Length: 211
Ligand SMILES: N[C@@H](CCC(=O)N[C@@H](CS)C(=O)NCC(=O)O)C(=O)O
Image (tube, rainbow, N blue to C red; front, side, top):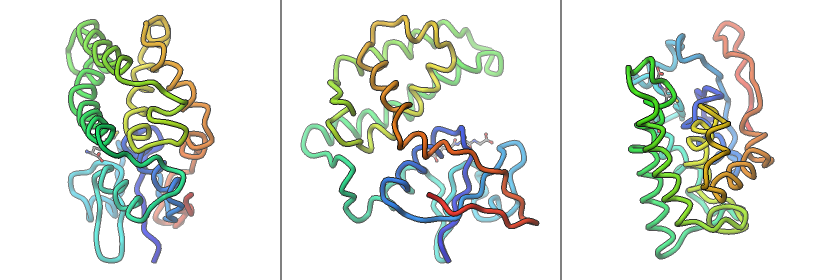
């Protein structure tokens, strides 16, 4: 049995998992779902109800970073491998974007749902992106010519920040971050990861082989 991936196209966590699977050429059956109508088959194996979920014959991985680690278990030649200070910085940045940045992004993007003042949270996102700007020098990816796990992990969230208000985003002074995001969104990797799939219907058994 090939692994099954429950995925939602626009979810940044699912996006980064799909990109890792593409980079590592790990085949799975992709089942596109809707968050508002999660299939029982997914909830039975992962009751927390978040995507991505990857189901194997003998285990389930329901955290995107675990799926990425599994995909990268054996060396992948087209992925930049961190060492030394880059490795530490990368781990630190992934944690920062998964926690603080995501917290403010949600309260900026979905302010009516959270009952928050979007401006305050936009400012917090800006502080983090300005700080990122000072730490990176993309050529064209964050750490060099090849894409890294840091790129695929944080860029989907930076993209969401852009989508919340493109005019504001592109008027900011974090130029390197903006160029990096543009490069990412125009990459074959992103295009392939964002391919559209019909919703999975258990009655039709219409999962798609991915990538
Ligand atoms: N820590 C999880 C977070 C995954 C997550 O929160 N995914 C969102 C979609 S972007 C989700 O499934 N939310 C559940 C819902 O909206 O019902 C991971 O890294 O996989």
